[in-house]
Image: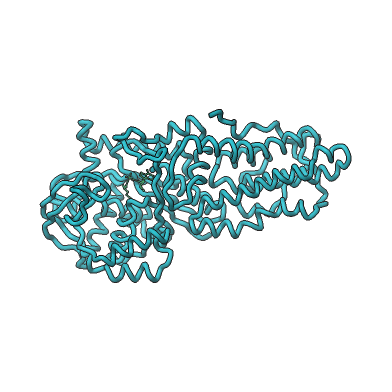
Length: 503
Ligand code: MSP
């Protein structure tokens, strides 16, 4: 079995989870589930980023000790993972012991290779971004992200980032898909071409972080600590055999705002410590809310849990993935959400399921009818279409074109609806029962295949469809697409998959 290691960013625990967190995690969940169904040995990691000044400040504001504070907020993120039905195999917290030892092991490697030296940092720091900025990077006295900056002057260890400029450019050039989408890759390349300065990687003015080995005055810069999570979870400091098996990651999925950390700093740290590089960094875009930037001060933060309670989990999973090409920015609008639920889900897939199962219950003795393999060309098109498309779908998934997979599946769902209208089983009922049975058999077979293929995107809906057809749990993989559903199974009255929403 081939392995597939996929990660989400680890989320800062300074605040409650919002739609941005849910989005990254959902996209990774779709990829992880897809690969599992395609017979890969998947390791899907998510977690929380619990150190740094931002988290320490948030804890202080609540008059709590940082450790007590992060214990509570990290739980909120774990509950969100459950609520989103994420299939993650591990949840890492950067305050865990295994992570501390992993960070220190990486630090020692960097130190021993001569890539770390002691100096003094003086410059700007944005706590919200947890990032250092040069004077010439500021825009009207603020970070390029609009965040406030403060002047910092303190002793600091530096990582010789400048030394890795050429190697990084070579990496981007030789590895076309190391950074995707291409537009984002170009931004990174021009940033690196512009020249890299050595990076401050320790802080002394507060102490909520991983201690620097052999120097108790310093804690590690939170991004060095955070990025290391990806190797910690793979067993870097705890299980060498496991680490050899799992690392490197196949893909780190991140938002566009944190691409630089993943595509510049992270590979440089890894090269300097002689570790393998992740195979791909994919940066997705940002959501706005009804055209406006999402921010706490504007009071327009979208709470994923509220949204799921109101519209249903699979509805939200479908909408977020279908609405915006993965990699682009997108706008959240309730009107568009309702429109997609009513047309794509309720009218199209929901209706297909409802009409086919109800028709067989009423007209085929309540059972899946027998086709006696008397298929015409138009029938074969319906029952073979998904098998034929699988390699195309795999290719889309490997290029993270998640919305395109849904578009393709929905074209097929529409063709099944069109097939019913053209074949008119209600007319065949009166003049050709055998033909009616073939048509209904094909439609049920197509529902089985749809059920299998939508599992990564809408796991509950996939399960409902497959349960209703009594498909065994171990027959729900992509390799089962070429099976054929057995006849004579007694069907139950179908439940409504997607109730219509009145807007
Ligand atoms: N802790 C760091 C990541 C460390 S990874 C080694 C961090 N955390 S975060 O909680 O601030 O952000 C996590 C993710 O949420 C990022 O990928 C970010 O792009 C994403 N989003 C935050 N707001 C978003 C939107 N409005 N829309 C889409 N995603 C957004 O950064």
